[in-house]
Image 1 (cartoon, rainbow, N blue to C red):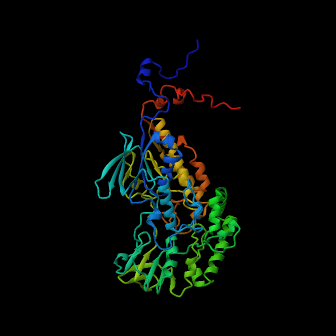
Image 2: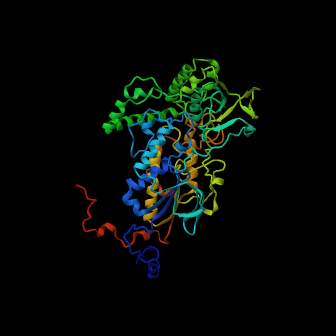
Image 3: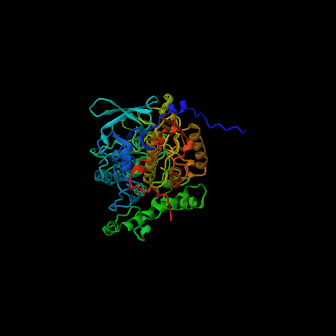
Length: 568
């Protein structure tokens, strides 16, 4: 007689050890306590999904709070208020995806206009319902016994308290932690010193000698505005050149002939977009399509890269009036896109004015009254403007201590590495918007925030309904993702020979900021959960306890269609 194959332990004692969970399948044990840190675009897009797009389901699964350090929503657009602050992505594709406004004044919007729209939409949709303003997270520690994060929070003027979270979502972004540049004796300067991220709007810049340090996005926008002020003398100190180029005139996208790099929308155009939403959608899609197709230019040595380089060089030379001294210092010899391209042409024209000058000689020292450069020149100045951006190391300013007492700061000390930009090994139930290797290198960031929100909601649904204690990407999986991402990056211009915030450790280091590929690849990679990549731990000794009593809840509804799966 053939031996009956074993199917595991089937003894009555084993069966009685796992009692029936007398609830319909997928019934949550409890609501998940979800803590989101930050009320910028990321936190608000997530809030809209929880409160509106998926409200019927999520109100049964999630108890949500957002802790925001500031007293208002806005994120980076609240933090950055320097003169000339402007987004380098077209307004119509850089806005909330759930309620796009047709009423932008210009192709590229000012920071104040973006902030006003964010705050208006937040009020319209009641997105501050779950926000605790003026509450600063001071630390988070994973507690394995509870399968929860111990979140310490300090309210302004109050006492620190603890919030226990099943899931923590970092929506802090990466453009908020600023510091003075590492320049010898910078703090010995006795004149006015100001950082682009902490602008003093009460200071009178007129009749001042001004040093502007930096030619990144903020420097490119600040300098032309300061140059307009009466009787200023301005010197721009740069470490190297940058591509300042807007491409084809935006008006060409809609058949116009306005040569401006930032044309205003006419009232007739705005009214058309108001009255005909489908026309507005076509226009938005046309611009988004053009940006998505432009990703071909980021391929090293491609025909698209060669074409854009030729166009950018010709454009910059023309705007600099072909002055050799300026062209040699301001036009790069590395690939277009190695650093983020800035469309701020007024910056270039400013150097043709008699009161604006440029030096690429390195600053070696600062004293009470001025700046010393490597070429032996001393620059007497009244004001130093540090347009030197942010600390983009990705490490939060508070301790994040994960499984087995692993510190995120120590883990990311040399270079930050993530799983698909949205999670990190050793950090269970911890999700990140715009983490290491995010879609920050080209086009609009906003679509990827929407996709990331949907990805996080898939996990919230799975954790709640399948009685999961924790999900965490495995280290070897993240390592493989990062190593293959490095291979892709070698084919893209971001690994070119330029100094860039895309690379934490210098021109020849690995790219730590940018996603390894196109934004559409990111969309496909996080469209679904890759369960095989995770260490998943359950609250029950039997992972299938969530099957409950063997019934779906809707089977008890006499009006439910229980043949929904049949097709004609």
